[in-house]
Image (cartoon, rainbow, N blue to C red; front, side, top):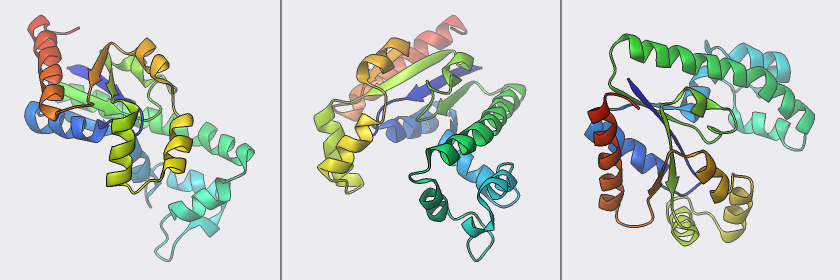
Length: 202
């Protein structure tokens, strides 16, 4: 199985790339944010951990964890946030490894991991390749204003919290330029995957 890690800054178009990999290459896509939300649900592995750390006040009327209440508790409380990260992230990482192993077991040809903190959490170490989805700042800003309604201040604050272009490039095995027409992005994806599969595996 070829395992690709996909990362990049906000507004770079990672979601579009993931959809394309799933639709045209039948890739199994593991999105870490989606996985984290699943594990927070009642019956999920991190559900009791959140309750132990933050108390029952974070639950909504259905007994599910209210993400807005959780964010409010953590805002401005770096010590509590650090404790949450220290407790929750290892569980999410373990779950990822289990899901990757399950995909290998069933003979999956191509799998993709997408995570905002892919490099920071060292998920790239289990991947065959790390792809950095790049788009120039003007394109990213335009996308965020159009699709999410972000204003300039929010865009700047969000981008400052993320890794720099230089850092992404340092770790990437492939930089995919997603600034222009998506057909150009697809060509870059196809060229790389055809090369990988022709070799059997990186």
